[in-house]
Length: 209
Length: 209
Image 1 (tube, rainbow over the protein chains, first blue to last red):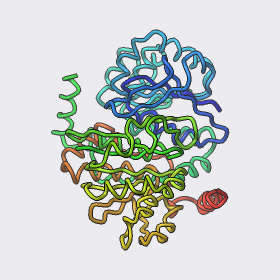
Image 2 (image 1 turned 180 degrees about the vertical axis):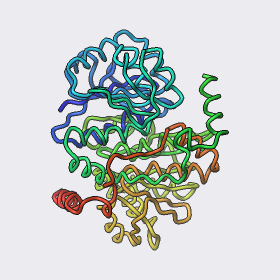
Image 3 (image 1 turned 90 degrees about the vertical axis):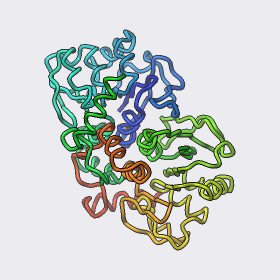
Image 4 (image 1 turned 90 degrees about the horizontal axis):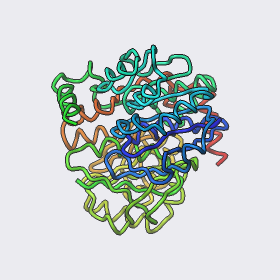
C-alpha cells in the first residue's frame, strides 16, 4: 500500500503530518513524501523543514494520494508540473485525498468538476472556480476523491480512510494508539461555533493577504 | 517568545508538529527545533524526516519547552546530554511541557518527583519510577510543568497553553484558524472507550517491543 504525500514550500505541516501519522499505521503501508524538487521543504511559518525523499517522477502509481494545503498551495495550483502529477496519479489511485486548501490543487487539476467538495472554511467558496460545489463538512467523499476541511480535519479524514481500507477494528486500534480522544479546551473550531468577532478577524486577515 | 521543540530520532512526528502548528501562531512566537545533533531527524516509521536547525547549546533560555515522545524517547531518556539540557532550560522556562512519552524524559531529568503527570496511556505507569503520580487525563498542569497524554493530546495541551499565555480570544482564533473542530468517525481514542480486545491488542504489542 503505497501512500504519496505531496510536499511543497510554505505548506501547513499539520495538513501533511496528521494524515501521515495515521495512514502509516495501516498494514503494509509505505508512505513516500514527494516534491517537485526533492530535499528540504520549508513549512508555513518558516521554522520547520520536512524532507521529501522522492521527486514527482519517482512515485506515479500510489494507492493513496494526499494533497495538503497552506499558503504555498496558491503557487502549487498554478504549477503545471504539480498539476500534471496530480492528474497522473489520480488515474490509477484507489483514493485521491486533500486536506485544507489542498482541495484547490485538486480543483485546478480538473478533478472536482461537478463534484461536492470542501476546504478550509476561509477558502471553500474558491472551489466554485473549479466547477466544484462547496460543502461545509469535516470531509466530503465523492467516489474515490475525499476532500477534508482545514488543517486538523486531515486527521479525521485519515481515520475514516483507515476504516474504509482496513475495517473498523484497525481504525479503532490506530485511534487508540494515537490516543485520539480530542478534548479541545475551547469550542471555536468552526465559524458557526466561534464568536462572530473572531470569525471576522480571520476573514479580514485572509483578505489582507 | 522563544519556543524550543526537542527533536530526536524515532520520535512520533505528530507529538512535535501538533503543538508546533498552534504555538507558532502566538504573537511574537519563534519556534526553534533543537536536537543533540542538528540536521535531519528520522521520525518513527522511517519515512518522514524533520530538520533540527539548532543544537542543544544554541537554545538555552526558551520561554516554552516542548518534549515530544515516541519510541526514540527510550534512548533519549538515558542520554545525559539531553537530560542536562532539559534540566537547564527548565530552570528559566515559563512552561516546560511534554507530549506522550516525552513525560518520561521529564521524569528521567528529575522534574516530576512528587508531581502528578500523564503520558501515553500505555506508558503512564512507567512515570512511577521517576517519583511521579500517574493520572489518566488529557493533560496535567503542575505549576509550570504540563504533561499531555498520547500523541494527539499535544494539540489540546498546546491550545490550552495558548489560552494561558495569550488569553481566550487568541486561543479561539488559533483554534478557528486550524479548524480544530474534531469529529473522529470512531470513538476508540481512550482505553475506557475502545473495545477491550483492541486495548489488549495494543498492550500485547507494546509488551512485545
